[in-house]
Image (cartoon, rainbow, N blue to C red; front, side, top):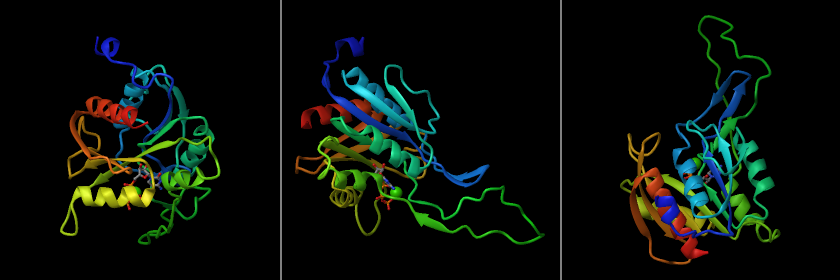
Length: 231
Ligand code: CTP
Ligand code: CA
């Protein structure tokens, strides 16, 4: 009923959403991963679809089913996700980078399974930085007009003695150069794999921050509404 009554806020709009968490391969059977379930990204895809958008969802290891009525693309590692984002982004009006992207990956991928070899030794795994997909696509827009005009980042932040969640969020928004940053307040048991979220929506154009909390679908509807107001 909700869906039938809600306004088609994003009718005629094309939206690309990344969801889930990347896996960085170590050897043929192992990876470095993270605890993102993909629930928030799937809720965003659902909310965008319900708002009348044409939705492409790039899924990295979702623990929940993808919604019907969206074009589904799969990626695994951060490098694969980067490739998929750059392939699918042209022609979209909005990009929402909700996936948890590994900041680092193993420097080498072993061709065969890493063995114990002797009684006591353990390997040291060297990591290298992954590209920043969000910052890269923001930067690529100056040469590629078909890339999304409205780019949204997500950030899980904790406050500490050096700054509040909002201060860290504001600094990250400026660093990334995107139009909107959705900041999730996280603690030990908050957000990752949980059913509910508490968010602050920050805008690069100086519009006042918007706060919301609720189920991941409720939060997703707020984010979609804010995007539709801003574009
Ligand atoms: N992101 C990305 N590529 C990366 C890392 C992050 O595109 N290699 C995107 C995420 O999808 C998210 C946003 O950047 O939309 C913020 O992610 P976050 O991890 O909070 O930012 P980082 O710049 O990695 O900062 P931190 O050092 O705090 O992890
Ligand atoms: Ca990060």
